[in-house]
Length: 81
Image (cartoon, rainbow, N blue to C red; front, side, top):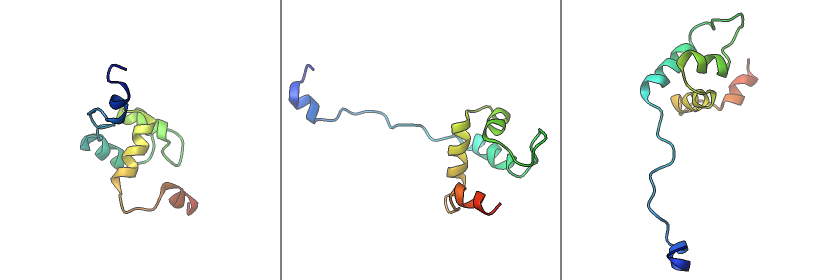
């Protein structure tokens, strides 16, 4: 408000959005995909994996999407199961 219309036309310098996930949690998430889940189920759930790694479920999903950049989308993989 102090700069008026000219201030609205200029974008202020801001830090980037989200910081990337550290390699250690990504390695744990990917490692868990190769182990059986600790509960009576055939597949890991996002919530179970998040609890095992100590991060949010959305972080697990983001970690898996970033782990295999050349892989097919998750929905395409699930269609073949």
